Each structure stands twice: as C-alpha cells, then as structure tokens.
Image (cartoon, rainbow, N blue to C red):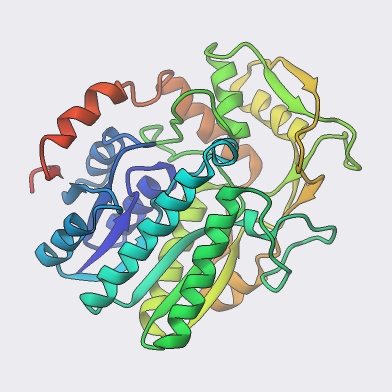
Length: 357
C-alpha cells in the first residue's frame, strides 16, 4: 500500500516525500510540474536511496488520475497540488478557482470511487484573513483576503461537507504559516520560478547576486522595528507534521484542522539579520510602500497539533537561515533545469519513474 502525494515535486511536497521514504512508507507522486521541477524528485531518490513511481498528471485530467489509482494500491493521499501565488491569484482568479477547486473535486471523486478515504490537505494560514488577536488558534474566524486563500477556504468547506455526508472519511486539514529553510544536505530546497513571492527565497537570491536588493513592504507597523512579524517554520519540521497528521488520519475517522507553526513571530528585519549571521553576507534592502491587506503580526498557536498529533516544531530561526543559505549557495540557479525544456519531454509520456523502478 502506498501514500499518494499530489504536487510531490514542489518545495514542501519534496521534503515530505523524503521524510515519508525515510520513515519506511511507499509513495507514489503525481505532479504537472507547472511550478515545480522533476529534478527535486531525482534528488529525493538519491538522498534516501529509494525508488518510487512518479506520474506526470494534472488533477484536471480525471481519466489520467483514475489510471494512477488503477495501477497502484493507494492507502491515503497527501494533497499539495495547486497554484499558490497570492499576487497572481488576484490577477487570474478564474485560473485559480478552476485549477485548485476543480482539481481537488476530481481528486476527491476518484478517491471515493476507489474507496480511498484518508486525506491530509495542505491548507494555509491565509484562511484566517485579518485578525487583531494573537496567537491564532484553529477556532478563530476565517475569511480569506485573496483568491488563493479563498480556494483553500472553499476546499476546507468542501471537505467538511464531504465528512458530514460520509464519516468513513478521515481528513486532516493543515493550516501552515511561513515555511522556510531547506534539507540539511543542501540538495533540495525552495526554487521558485521567476521573481520570488516569499521573503526567504528573495533574501537568498539577493545573497547570491541574482537580485540587487530586498524590498521591505512598510516599516510603520506596531512591531519591534516597524516591519511585519510572521511565524516562520522550517520546512523539515513542516514535512514531519504531515507524517504525524497522516498517522492520526489513518488511525481515526475524524476531520480536524491543525495549525503548523512555531508559535513565535519574527519581523522582516529580524529575519534579515539572522540570515546575515548565517551567510556572513550583507543583504541590502529598501523600505517601500506597504502592500494592501498585509497584517502587522501573524503567528500561530500550535498547541492543538502538539496535543493531538504529538508534533512540535524543533528548529529555530538561525537553523532555518543556515539551511536556506546552504541550499542557495550550493544551487545558485536552483535545480538549474530549464522548465521549457523539461515540460515537452514529460508531456510525451504518461508517466516516468524516479530511480530504477
């Protein structure tokens, strides 16, 4: 029996694949590589010494998705796949609703058809919207502020309705905060296409000279230095959270939501300082106009995950920065594989294999 990972070649997905393999699980990966790279999976194979099957499948292609379930004994699904850029979602809302929601509906329908009713869903702290109280716990009101966040929130509502209709399902909804860092080997990490949307890859690309300076959006907030405060979590801690949620989901028939965060907040400039210590490089930055909708402070209350999953984030901000810098310094151009050259090759085959399988 295998765990199906949708979007397994992505930043969080690839780290979760690695942790699953190291824990002795068999995995099957599907990805359309629209915002990821198959090289990440090749490196997961090298790091673990284990092979696994990977399919080039878009969740909008229901027929191909059914093929994956026909060819493999799937026990449970960890669902990462989806478009994820907040700014792009504002510009292209229909694309985000079509891809993220319709793709998930296809996945759930196929899972139901094959009687696979255990799911860990990759949600986001963006579902909470604007809030003035901290830390944020799972019972806070929800209200996403952009199409990306609303797709996550709508999927959460779909999953709740699904569970009400059929309580044979076991579903864990993971609302995670700001993943940064990389695997300690420096072999896999965050490799965004184009200009990064998130703070840490922007900082690391400034450090290696790909970008000239960091734009800091606003310094007027009621924080230690005026810049926004966020809860940054090491991607390996986050990946391990998925394993703990999977264990809980497969052993119980419940639907639960969990925050995955550290419970600590760091300002933008505190992260910059920590990265400068880790890299021994100066990060030039410029204060620019604050972005509309940004909140001053956002950090998690992770107590529920500790109590019910036995999960606690272990890595601090210094280790997050050290690992992010190791990844970027060893891979200044990311996975260094041209996306335009990779995709046509993949589209010529229904599936391919990582390793020797």
